Image (cartoon, rainbow, N blue to C red; front, side, top):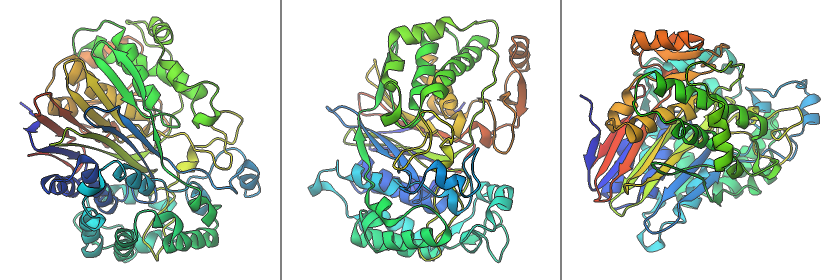
Length: 528
């Protein structure tokens, strides 16, 4: 039987072992969960580069004892030059580009988010930045052992990346895809991280590093300029929240899809399902997902441009109406067209009672692919999430694009605090719902809830089908019943990447901590 790791002095979950160890080391040194997360975020940017990097965005939810949960939106805005007309002149009239220099159009926000999060730690207790970045610097300088996941992703996406400036010389070895176990050194990135440690994280946006990136981006053909970097600042925000029968659930504000994750669980809470792993459990969550995604797709975007606040979507009467639309015997027709995405989620808890839920992404594998050879930084393609058609997510200068990213955190009525999340683009709200419902609603062990077979409604990486995809470890009788109810079922291999790389941390009232990580990734859950 699977069991989560337990202990009292600190907990960390990450989809790469090196990141989990980096976070654990900071916790053991007396650092806070916030500092441990910065150390792990820097490390995983080096060791899992196909999934994230310091050229991407990030989002935080931070629980601190006796205080309101703090959200940090480290989402970069579109360049001042980035208009539909600018892209139309370059041949993009129907859809945004996804690779290359013109796909690098939003400021990378995650480093600013690290800085904003560290500002919440008392100065006299804060560990030096050099200590927090030392693990990442060591891996960048001395090399990482390429994971099978990175090797497979690089090979699968190589056709769209090999000719993008800087990509091949940074992420290929002698012009070839690195095999699993190959040593990949990123010495320019090591120098960049050393500079950040010495000069401060703000130098990413207003120092020599910013000037180097701005010059490279302009020369390559990106619309980003130095003034775009200087205008960026991560924001402290109040997270979205919804009350359920099990406690208060929280997630990130728009432009993330955090509201959809909350809607799914709040709608499911209204369906009266009392038993996990059966037809009612899966069908109910899948149908709640459809209703939440319909609302999300119609109105989600930069919160400054939305017709109404996303918090309004979580009003009781709105959720009641969505639940009433669900037929618990038959599937609702599903024409939805989702988006791809690549991301990492990590969670941490410390001996002081702090809990962190964090997510960091470059959107698609290796983002835009555009990599600055001088710094080793590659830039996200999050701007591909914009639309060129009228609506709340239409491209405009200074606007923030729709984000699949959403870290989750909940205060349960029994006093537990749970941080949970996953990578997986469109699948993130669905995997969050699977893990939360299994552990909190139906009492499964935390690790068992993460390991159990999962589903994905919609398109998986590199495919166009919008079927209901099930990992093939589900009971055949359950699969047959879902088909009978009208679900268009497609089977995935066991432990498929398409089902996400999830993790979770639980802090109990007595100080006990639990941690779980996903066997689908290369990660680790550690508790002292």
